[in-house]
Image 1 (spheres, rainbow, N blue to C red):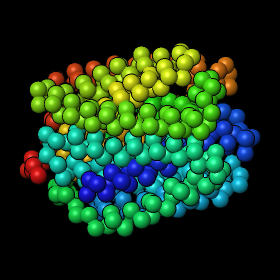
Image 2 (cartoon, rainbow, N blue to C red):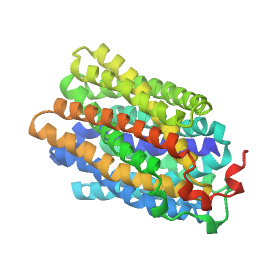
Image 3 (spheres, one colour):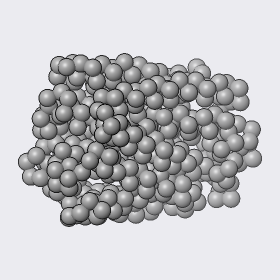
Image 4 (cartoon, rainbow, N blue to C red):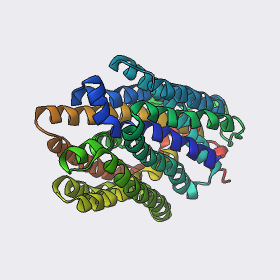
Length: 404
């Protein structure tokens, strides 16, 4: 189950991250400003955010594997269709459909994983799921740069869209992990009464603002300011970010599970420290003029920022009953993608049009630091109220204690 879901995550993020390396080609093909280019990421994030809550709601009530399969099929066809678009409006529409598919699969997949593994191994399991995301995103960037320059931007979407269709059939054969009866689902307003969860959502908005901005504008930045060619950016940054992300996500998951045994807030502490350690290296990448220094700085920043992916899902599921796993992730994704994922690329693009991209990326670093510091407030509430807040006690059952 974990292998299949990780492969789907791989294809999903290869699809998503193939676009940033194509920015110079899309700018020329459609005569776009930087603000308009930010809409490509913005419309996907908007639709993804809007769909996360209802699909999370459905995943806590109905068959998760069928919901995932439907989402994979939809985004695969939408990706292939992207390569056929000839106007900017049609291109935006196709990317919006990709967002619908992604919203269908993510909360359900993460819920299945947490249900299939013990609490003690939860961050490591979610980190392995995130390996697919990070590896796929890196391969997508490399493919976007290489195939885009070789065969044109349209060919990139054909290469990435077809594998998703094949994986959708494997999902239908996955068994559902155990969870409580359907009557024990948690209303959304009860989730938001948990202070640690609410602050974690706000913190997630800030770090997503920065992370998505770095991803969206990173390739364009090194091409315009660091003398990388488009092909060089894809083939040099790709392997560097792949290795750093894989090492970081696995290290972060292991460290988070280790600290969780000693402190109730150990997992969120791992996430916060990762972003604080990454910030100086992002700043270095922005300031340095040497290509080797840029690659070293991106390697270190990617390593520490990747600590986020497994532990953050594990922390949310630690706080929630099993029948709220998908809904709580859906609410978190809605807030972080709607506000952070959309505003990050848009704000940096606006600052680029107003002054330059360097200013925009420096602002993003400051926002990331603010989000990391806010996670210390999450730790305070966990120490005060415990991971299992009394507001949700009536929704917890013996199923929440099952260890597989």
